[in-house]
Length: 395
Ligand code: FEO
Image 1: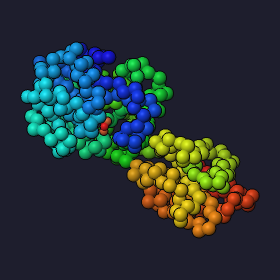
Image 2: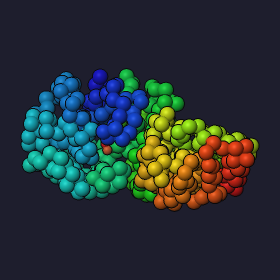
Image 3: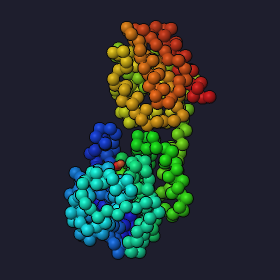
Image 4: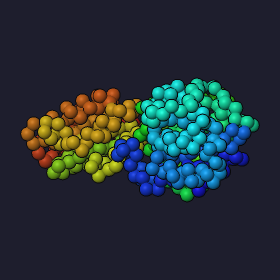
């Protein structure tokens, strides 16, 4: 599976076809992933990032096809999360005198994970390390997506290795963007941005401006997950600029859970109101929808309308994880609304609206609360709510 990206620059990563959840169970990865590791053979042999520890044996076996690991002089650890740093102990047992290049914050996180006294060299933005016929140039990229994250750029070959930034959880037999299904690639790149990078949109915009101002020629962007951007590599940079601007489409997501179908019927009536104003929408039943995929729909949409019955003076627990994500991901430029049914105490609207407020999502209209199953009048009120949200979307 070794792939030569440019003369004496190799992808030596691993494809994880089977993984379906990342960060424990936080992030769904329907299409698997890859752990990309890069090897540069110049006067000095350089390894940029490693792989997750369960894959280290096959990774080292592949590496040995190209280089004796004992000859590696420099190991760049762009980021400490174990999907990229997990192979450090194994490879550094084979090249114990190698210099381990880390960012300033990486000097905290890498030792924090491995508690080893490796030969660390700390670099900052603009620092260069000559490796023979070319240089490594380093760019700190805090919060893209951890404080320790760093980009490494290889002069001469013009390859940017930005670690997680510009990645996708996409397992493939192919290594380059011009070889894979473009729709799948776009979906996975967007899902990755939405679920991992959205809270840091401001830093993304600033960092892209900073990197572009360096005027470094870029022939490839080689992230640490998924395929390498070879054809029009800056296309993903432009997409990140667009996504980081958070200008949602004029559409809506209705996100609900239901016990005995009352709230489901309300959701569909809200949808009727939106459709009456020609606003496209998705109606997502929280328990039947992958949370990370639902977040992509919310990211794309101007409006998020949340429905739940009242349950134990609050909401159905199934709706809570996505509300927690909405708070943490800090989506911008949204509007929201609430609906729900109850039998006895009826707190659901108040609780949903409090959550939306915590997410800094202003209300487009007052919520609609129904006691027991909705009557025809209640469903008309839901439809009116949909119309009100639609007007705010289109305003
Ligand atoms: Fe792919 Fe932040 O680890």
